[in-house]
Amino acid sequence: MDILHYGFMQRALIASILIGLSAPSVGVYLVQRRLSLIGDGLGHVALAGVAVGVLTSTSPVWTALVAAVAGAVAIELIRAKGRTSGDVALAVLFYGGIAGGVVLISQAPGGTPSNLNAYLFGAITTTSQTDLVVFAVLSAVVLLVTHGLGRYLFAVSNDEEYATASGLPVLSLNLLLAVMTAVTVVVSMRVVGLLLISALMIVPIATAQLVTGSFRATVLVGTPIGVVVSVAGVVTSYYQDTPSGGTIVLFAIGLFVLAAVVAGLRDRRRRLATAPS
Image: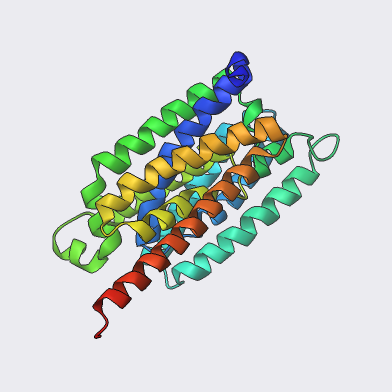
């Protein structure tokens, strides 16, 4: 394949595999907790971090990471300790993040930076060797935490009250998951973009849920789906000259629709088979 002859595409494919593995690994717990849109909120907060990086001439990856982690911790603490509901806290974070990002970016010398779209919608072919190393380290941390502590994260995500009664450190585990979500958002911003990352975290898991019957099976099926749609999106974007982020998400949604149709036909056959003659 001629696509492998170019260094930038080799880095792009590696980055797509990394995010394809890590995004659903975090997303499965967000779906379980009914926090599917938290990736969007943290993406907007990370945008403010990118703006800070642009203004201070530092690495936007690291400033975005700091902003996203701070936002994730704030949401979790407000949800756990405050009187504001999680939905309201997420909405405040969502709008505050994008408003802060817009205002800060407007102050950048020379106006809006030309590479802003790369962070908003993804530009995987611009991934540098340094970016790839950072993404690999962060993805390894996400996978280590989500799989190594999987049974505890599941217990908390499934029933917080029971987990508390069982003696689990619920707040600490929730904070850890929030931080891993923030890390995943930042890792993904050059692949699918800050405005689209939530789709890659959630849609592969939603697809897996349509064809599986248990949490473990959902993880085992959802993660490969994330890898497949990420790689397929990158390859297609190369040959068709389309944005990588949007192409990846469209593949994920297309697979979800296909799975929904198959699941609907399967359920219909079951109803017909069990119906009294």
